[in-house]
Image 1 (tube, rainbow, N blue to C red):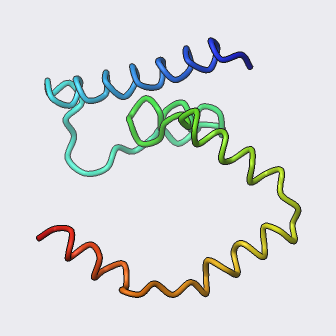
Image 2: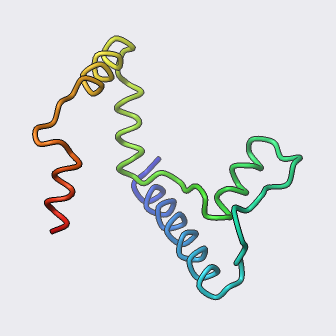
Image 3: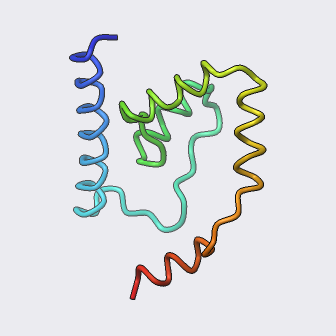
Amino acid sequence: MTTLEQEVMDLKTRLGRLEAVIRHLTGDTYQTGVPVPPTSLDQTELLAWLKANGLVREPTTEEGRVAAAWDALSDEDKQRHIDTMQHLVLDPPLSQILITQRR
């Protein structure tokens, strides 16, 4: 996919989110609780419905690059990264960093 095509896709995604916000602010889609999809949707239709209701979005360009880099890793490299992140110890803990930043 070319850069221009990716930029167009990003703009479409941003436009979809903006339209969802406008619909919400104008009360066009006000609903109590969580919207419920029709019961007879296949996976493609369900994804389209979720996007239309602002519950999911297309990945950004950066998210796409990161996902592609992850997909390119070997299973061993992926597992090594997962293990590292699961045993990561932050000092101070992340919760303390957030509390400090909010002050």
